[in-house]
Length: 219
Image (cartoon, rainbow, N blue to C red; front, side):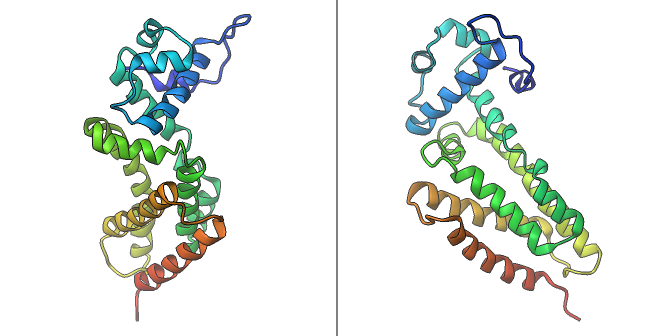
């Protein structure tokens, strides 16, 4: 399996007129993403990837080892390109303990990443992996999803301990909220529901208001 820390290294070892190994891997993964979001994992073969990327099948095997290896590298590549924990707005709201701001920033990050490119949305890959490659979904997507859940769970647990929120299972709240965002994103990608970000925010703001009111500890 390809080491994604190598793929994401931005250092340059470019040679004259040629892509470096790292740059070549990134280019292959981008071409693979386009194929997989259009044809699914089952409909994407090493030969098709090689033709689209303009490389040989042997080079694909050299970089990724196998068809499974390139799929796994692709999932990691996509998630590492949008680390939720690196979102500056979300981090600021977490530090300020701004309940509304935390849920809103979390929502915007997920929605923007999943729907920015509807044709090649990472969400399509997640859905395909769930249906066609459940082992890859279990190994990679669930692990990445756990990071997002941990952020919300940690924040909710802190507010419960501070006596701001009522005693409730923070995991259930985080899972439910993320499921709502995922469903909205699926609709936006498959049958565009929001033509402007403001329309999405109007819906999410209403949900957040209801959620926070329900979480508040009553005297």
